[in-house]
Image (cartoon, rainbow, N blue to C red; front, side, top):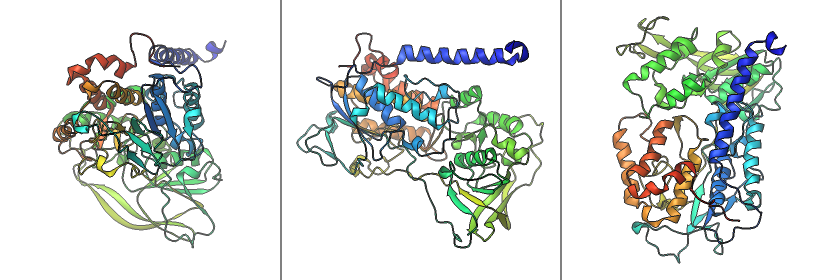
Length: 522
């Protein structure tokens, strides 16, 4: 009867069944075997320090322990989850969760899970792989130093041994710094706070307990956190909502087919045919609000905001979009400097077909339109998060021109491959930082520890960075400042192809397969 009342339910159930089947197959084929007991590994292949108990740190440590390496996770807070433990409960994945499989053991219930489900999956991996007894909470890492007694030459393919926080009785063979790119909320001092006495000024990560019903809300910042703050304010019944964006950012739909297609672009930069997905977005996703599409930035030049609802809220008048800068708080709200996008030529008609001659930015300029006072009861500062520092690592690991993000395979120090910074050098890209590459990077490190013959030298690693910078010369944001997921995949495949002696390790690195008994040791 249910299917007769709502025929679309059949299609939904088929999709859900396919979704669960795909996840089951991934778990069956790729999930590494967890340790059988809580006892320390007997005769481990090595010891690895993992800095940070967020999503990437937990996943990296799980891969290490499954391959027979003992690990210690250092976490400065008293909980696992990293940035996901500090955001609003309504925060969720922008991309479909099939593209956010940070570990093969993950089993999602929803296509776009929110914070609590994501944290639940992180904790599930953490406990299943016996990482709870290997995590040191409230332990901030202030220094990582080389063990002076070890004289192995890095230039000959060797690597340093490491001590953390000066503990000389505990030596590690490698360090995985998984501090991410989002640290503490960036709380700026907004001028005029002494005048704004009747309302609240909140960071976008502090909206869980905020009373927004029947309030006038002004959001300063047009990025992903700003868009999410608008959605939350509307869902909580805000009386009025305005978002103030300094720059227009690309907003793409939560469509797994479209998102996957643009992430499969292998060049990691604007190309001659990039106008095609941009035209598709302007024509369909931006219908009715095409003036909000970026005028001076291509889709392959910055991380897009993935959202289905925001443009609809603007289109229907639930949220007003203002291009400008916040200047100061006033007695009644916030004073902003308004900018307008002016189009000198009417080149872009609603139904115009794309062509190579179509100049999408022609004639667009910004024009100052003076100031405007926006009435507000709540001002939300969507100013993002501070970028965590890596000052605890030796500075000579990052010589001039080879600091983040210009690292070997974008995540290894060019001076010593035994220092890995998975997802900690990321700047911008199309794809996700929470997918299968976490395991691949970890297994590359493990392979280099197990097989001396396949190790790169500092010269090799710097040459890789130099070559990529040459190939992507002229790319906005730098050669390694933006990448697509297909580009990242090509890096990882070429890591094997360019060195045939690494090919025997290919199935282990890419898939975690050993074609024999499990690498895990009890």
